[in-house]
Length: 252
Image (tube, rainbow, N blue to C red):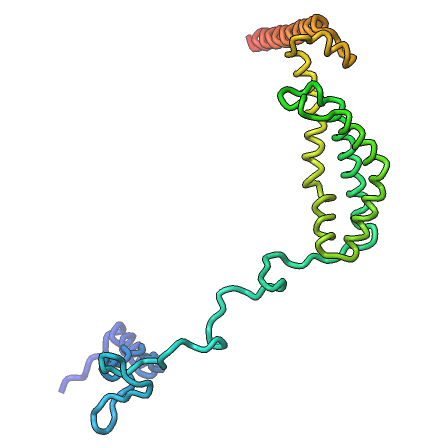
């Protein structure tokens, strides 16, 4: 009997790999498909084969899947967080500390006085609405405000320390939301006033009464300003041209 030949080295390596695979722990099986639910018996069937109906039957005679009726309030999901102010939409403001808004309110009060004074002086020359504005009464009211604004600031500051609504008002009044508008009005009013004087039929009379240059002098000033602007632009253009010429010579 002839001797058995030794196995091929590749066959041995395959043999070892097979042995390791057989001794390795089994892989977890993938979960199978869930068992099919009987639509006619979602809760199963009894010993007699009839569908179980722990929640009663529907109008069609099928077992209910859940209890009938709406869920209790405690079981219902909330769709919005509870509001600390009882649903009014505004969270209660904190009371102000002593003197917290004093400086901001004082600045706003000064700006109100300045704007009222500017409008009172410029009112007669403002186009369209100028004749409707009682300039003298606006100036007088500005004087009253100037004399009493410190007391008004102190009153609002004191109220903000004891009342949440007053604290919100003080924060808004002293936070810049109002100041910028007052500043804008005070700056625009003189421009509108002078423009109204220029377009008036008796422009020279109105300009003279307001202590402004005459109509002809305004035109002369504007002509000089235009000549200076044109001269500056011409000089700048000439300087750029000379710089470009020098750069071209250096490059050559």
